[in-house]
Length: 270
Image (cartoon, rainbow, N blue to C red; front, top):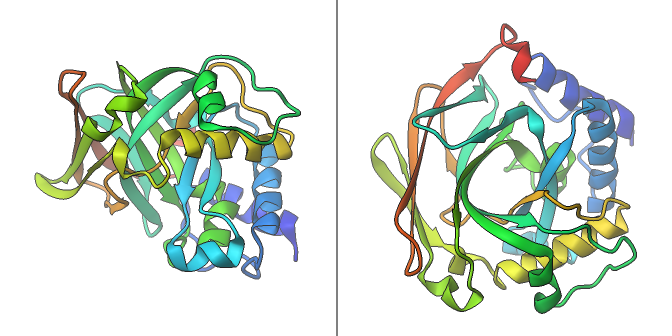
């Protein structure tokens, strides 16, 4: 398999704001190959990694790949603070989706030799929690349909992160933390921090171990987009989305965004 060619194809398509007609090579059979492609693409992208996203494999794929989760980098390129109608670009002819997220901040560098974490140890890595929205996005329209090995190979299908207000985090109050996503005024999904299989601390513990094994241990200040809490909601250029966060321990929070077409005339975004 030509790992370099696949990575270069995705990176070039992103830089040129150009959709891909199909996967640029043989679809990887194993996640190890996909992460090798992701690593090569990170080197080609040449932008700081400010955090990581956690995704979940569909149940049918979990036994095949012996994991429930996948990871992808979040870059500074399209990292934005929440504001009224944040503009987020999407690929014409590619894939784009809105995901309501709870975003954890890492409070200190993780031990690079530690590859297994209990939930208590994962909790000790965290120093803050925020409301947030992940923009999933790829130049490949079929990225999700082709399965997790394809998702991992293109930055985990991440295209940006909107960071909202800080929220109090009490593991005992997770059940009361709720989110809802609207697109063009219509509710498209409800959930919350409680919706994450195994809970958020198990997911962060998995990520910490996964990244240590890759030689990329979590670093102080990195942001962890911990998983889609209301679902993955496809969105097109010109549509608007609002995500609301409510809870027993915090006031209601709302993050609004509008999508615009990503074109080669806006290279500063990439």
